[in-house]
Length: 220
Image 1 (cartoon, rainbow, N blue to C red):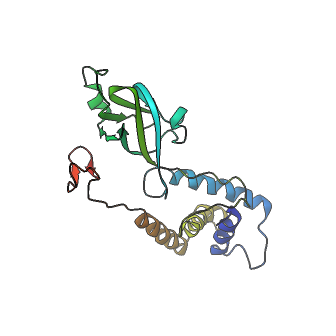
Image 2: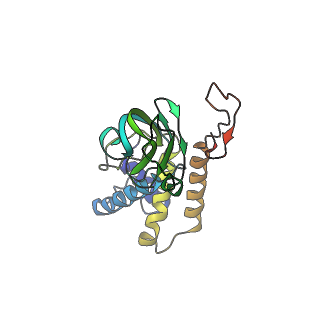
Image 3: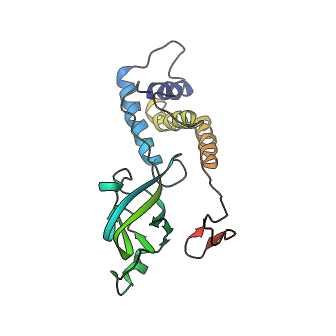
C-alpha cells in the first residue's frame, strides 16, 4: 500500500532535499504530484510498465468496435491491445493496410481478423453480428488523486515511481540530473520491465497444444 506523499518524500530524500522529520512543502508537493501523474500516464503506454492485464468483453455488431466507450470503456484510447477473441475463438491481428485491401469487408461469418488504428477503433473482418468480443490489454495506471489516497501497487513500483520522479524533478531542484539518480532509475525500471515479461511459448488452443507461435501473431 502506498500514497503519492510517500513516493514524493522518497524522491526528495534521494535528491537530499528532505531531511528526516521534515514536512514536504505544500507547493512543492503539488508540483511533484503533477509530475508523478505525468509519469503514470507515460508508463501506461505499451506493455513494459503496466503490471495488470485485463480482459474486457462486450457484444459487438458491425465492422468495428471503439475503445473508451460502451462495453470497452475501461480500455482507454491508445491502449495497446494484445489479443482479441470472437465468441472465444482467437482472432488474427492484421495491419490497417491489410484490412484496407480486403475487397468485401462485411462478409458472413464470425470475425476472424482485426486491425487496430492505434487510437480508438478496431476493425473486424468479417463484420460482427452480435458476437462477443474479448479484448486482452494492459490496464493503464490510475492517476494519483491526491497526496494521501492509499493505492495498491505490486512490489517494486513504489521504488520505481520515486526513482523516476527524482530524475524528473532534479533539473528544477538540483539544476541537473546526477549520475546516481539516473543509475537508481535504470535499476528500478530494469527490475519492473523484467518482472512484467511473459514469455509463454505454448499455445492455449487444444487443437495445437505444442504450437509456439504463428507467422502473423508472433509468439503466443
